[in-house]
Length: 93
Image (cartoon, rainbow, N blue to C red; front, side, top):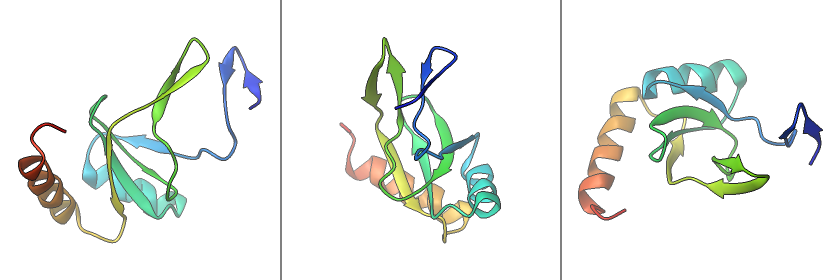
C-alpha cells in the first residue's frame, strides 16, 4: 500500500463517512457506491463498495470494525429498521 504523509492508504478503498443513514445514502448516490454501512465501533455511517473492509490503522496495523452493511437501495427508514431488528436479534454482537 502507498504511504502518504505517514498514513497508509489503499487506492482501492473508497469509503466515505456520514453521520446518519440519510447522509450515507446521499453519499452513496453522489459517489455511485452500492452499499451503505454503520460502523458500530465508531458510530460513523458511510458508503462503500461491496466487501470493502471498514476499520482503522494503529501503528501500521489494520483493525477491522464491526459494521452493519446493506445495499444502498433501501430508504433511510428501512435501513434504521433493519439495523434495529438485527441488534434485537443479536444482542451480544
